[in-house]
Length: 441
Image (cartoon, rainbow, N blue to C red; front, side, top):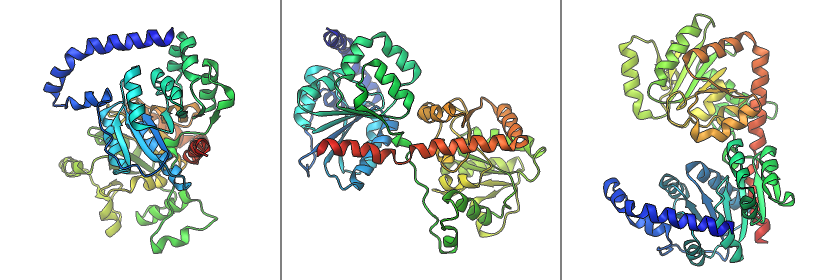
């Protein structure tokens, strides 16, 4: 009864939306073929290499990133199968297409109606269907099971808000969850919530978040090889390397603002100017998210007579300023190691935030603004351990850093908790890939 009602409502929604779709395509420039694909009218132009096929279903870019990590781990285990990725959003489809570079068939997800789902399954003939995080599509799961496809939930999570919504339709959700053959969730709280909604406890395990299964690469330059020794952690090796390269003594405090967007550089200058009067020798390092904005930032700072150097200038000569503007790609994830305090950008302006687990894996408790929609799961992970801090404006960031400067032991404890949270995610992709491998044996 529940599935029938859900399907009827789905048909009604499609019927209401269809008359508006063609005008929308004409106005937005989107091809009508995207709708045809969502209803299963496509030819899977892909050269299948293996007998087994794994279908990963993701909502958008974030879930695609988790899928890519799990797929990479799957291949590391020398387990082979053809890969299919479907996404709800076009942004997700673009991300999947770019990151798989032709090694996977990437499609827009089917509309969750019986005949559409059946058409997809018949054309793709998957061995395993993997839904990521909270992509619980009832007809997809139900008909995958009826076709003999193994169904797995990976990187599963349930926010308190989603959990409360699902509880209102618990009998229906229980039927949906019973379709899973196995499940891997991020945290113990996710496991408890899924079990209370009807998922079999024997089928569910806690494996962490594959999206944040990060690796700290060792230093590769010949003059840094001495740092890669067993008695020095990778984070400490990076800290010593960059402090030497940037001519920063080990005791010099550093505020690093990473992945900043327009408007945030000015905010960080305001933070620095206030804190510099309280914290002696404080150094500010700003790493803009988009390097094409560098010339504009430099021109603005020069016009305001702000004394600064670029990262490359410091490396080539010597540090003469307390403000450094990062002007090279690929440095930020490692550069976090040199920071005393970290602000992650794209969060005090509505850009969705950036990866706050990157500083956490180096033992830094990050500060970030309220606009963290793209990394809300990472935010929940850190804040559940009191290891990350939301600030709403410049003054809050100033107050927070000044407080921790005066209570250094408390700050060190939060940083240790940040590292613990990040380390708990390590190996997550491998553990989840193993779950897939078990179903293919």
